[in-house]
Length: 541
Image (cartoon, rainbow, N blue to C red):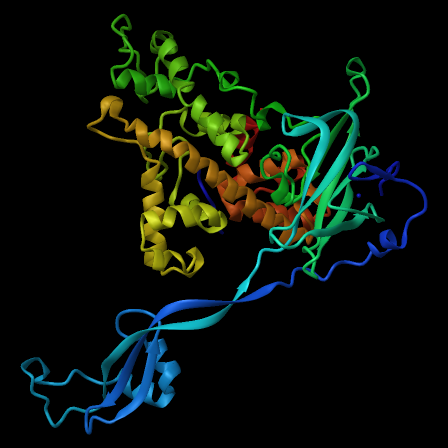
């Protein structure tokens, strides 16, 4: 992984099921009111809490006069902030430059002592009232009568979009759900069932929210919905339905689809962007010469019948070594399949994409070290680690405390010192480097196994960054200007060649007035970035 840093819809039918009642006829005044967005959550409670109050005096050395009384809510010395708030800027400034008093350790105080000192007075139980934000009502989106397959939903009956409201406060209840489906208002009780019509390749927008007896509402939510008729006549009449929403409660969405607001192709993504039904479906038997060479070097393959020792001068397997090592090579390239499958379930990174990437980057040999520091199954670099930590905040929050203090990590990666960022990047790169001179086969396979999830998280970071690059250039959601497949290709450019390469190509494509499709964007990759073309086409085969 090398880096250069340099929709009108027709045919929509709307029927609303509220509980068991089907709402027909003219729209009620309540339904008409649904066109007005809600006020949003507004629930704050006053809570009385017990705590220990610590009283301190800030006293002047010269005459032992108490100049300020400080109350802290924590053990230990008052902080500079405590003193500043209680005593004001003038006294704080003088206290901050006060030097230690000579002779104090012998119980003698020099008459030359100046400034202020802290004197602990007492601690006592105390109470105070704090404002607590209570959880708001929410609405979840799902489908009824559909089954999930290949990151899409297949419906043999007319699809029903189900909205379900939840009120987390025990003494309150949902007053109703309102919203707009493709601009048409609807209203129902605590659950809605919206009968969807076919939208074709386009999508419709569903805006929705709920009201509570508390007197407020949920925040307004939105879903993009696409309903395409299944054109396979042998299957009878059925539909493929895809929903993009932060409130989606159905089967997991296709990887990065929500980030980009991009639907996968109707019927599901192509094979290279899918996760199969079971890990065994990831199995491959590609004759990798570099992998075979490493297995030969480590003594895992018997090449006693090869006159050349089974190796070429480059370290790759010779034709004889390739033949001798094919069984071991096939076994090795599939040893990570279960892990790849499990990680794909957790992260939604397509399992086949992850395996293809490992195939291209390292031929599944996680200890490769080259002149450019690239390590592990996915050949992580320092720049790649920077992308993972910066553009995948949830991963950063998990990884950082393993390396730095919690108090440091809470600043966020962009606000760390350069040295702290460098420490984190180095730790992340080392965590995926399975090279181990003293281990069997020269590899720490425990680290290799753990690294699978790290590379998936790194891909999530790259899909986020690639989406931002396109959004910043076009001013629109990535899914509005490019396809799901092309967005993954752009993400692979970002992973392999870096955001500098992708940014230049996207900007030049935009300036040329061309569509954001792979054929156009790849032509605008600068010469130093063009190695990414073969990389992307190899992985996306």
